[in-house]
Image 1: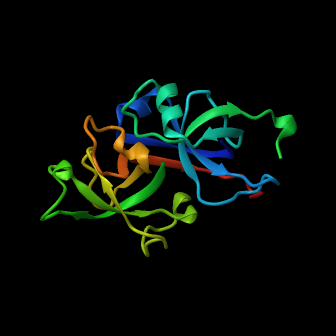
Image 2: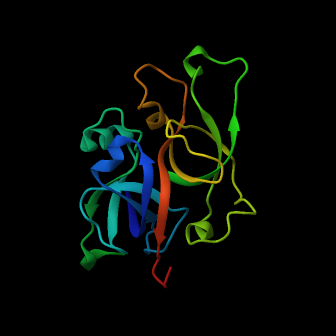
Length: 89
Length: 100
C-alpha cells in the first residue's frame, strides 16, 4: 500500500463499468516527510475521501477487483483507508 | 491508473490471434504540469504507450489507462495486453495544496 494525498478528481464521458462504483480521484504519492513524490496516480474512492486528505491506496489489482466486486475490472489502485490527520506525516 | 493524451493509432499487419479486432491507440502520459492545465504540446517527456481501447477514444482526447496484469482483466480469454483504456476523461479537477 502507499501513502498518498487527494489532490483532485476526474470525471469521464465513457468508462469501464467498474469505475462507476466510486469516484476517480487524483492521488499524489507522499514520501516519509509527507512531501509530493513522483507522478500523480488515479484511484477509485468508495470512502468519500476529501480534498488534500491523506489516504492509503492499494497497488494490487486482485485486491481492488475483489473490493470493487468486478473480476473484470482493469483497476489497480483503490483507496483502502483514510489516514487520521493527527498522525499525518 | 495514469492520465495520457491519445496522439495516434496503431494497426497491426501480423499479430497474435488474440489481438485481432482490438483497437490500439498511441498515448503520451501527462506531466504533473499538464494535470494542472498546462498546454498539451509539446508532449510531456516519457515513453509513449500503446493502449488497448474499447471506449472509442479519439486523437486529442485525454484518457485514464491502467497498466500491467490488471489491463488484461477485462477480457474473457487470455489476451496479451498490458495497457487498457479505462476512462475517457471529460474534466480534470486538480488543485494541490500551495505547500507541495
